[in-house]
Image 1 (cartoon, rainbow, N blue to C red):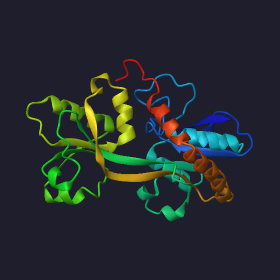
Image 2: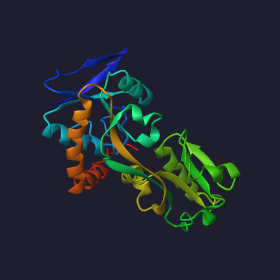
Image 3: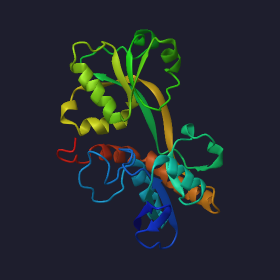
Image 4: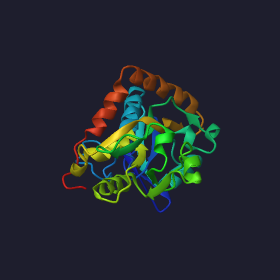
Length: 269
């Protein structure tokens, strides 16, 4: 059974009754495509089942095989963390690399890795594979994100950091910059390869306009981050068995490709 939990007025209201063993996952309302996709995710067409996404589908498979009922609470990121700490939800998708005290939680096996790369215009020379050629580049980054491998060059002024609020705005800036005569010759956005692929797939203007660097700026594994409630250690062990099997069989990669290729909403962008 899948249920959507609506969070309002500080309370968790169950839309459908719980049956048997229940696991409640906190997810962002607009998702984090293609890893988490909701009905409110921009650019997505009709969904037969929502939420979906790479990590959601892996969890659905594991839960079905273990006879676990899933509920999903759509809440903002910071509130989701607070709810996990207070035991109001059981699980989130997260990387231990992005958490202050990862030892305070239970972690599943890694599901898939996030790979940040340079995204740049197709007709621009690929100068993003080593630091020496990268010098002087204008780098479009996500507001509030940290880039440890690039930070020394930002601080020294040999790279220019150009923040945008979302990945969509980052690609828009890169696209329009490529149309301008005054655009710097070395210009790229830093974002996850699959996130970029998702956005490009849904914007007709972007088709065939961008390339990805072979170089990774950073990578981080995504896991299920689970609260340390009684019984959850055993639950994580059970889920891990299915994650390992799905990864070994290539099913996770198949799910990722299926999510990237979900129909786009006509006229959504």
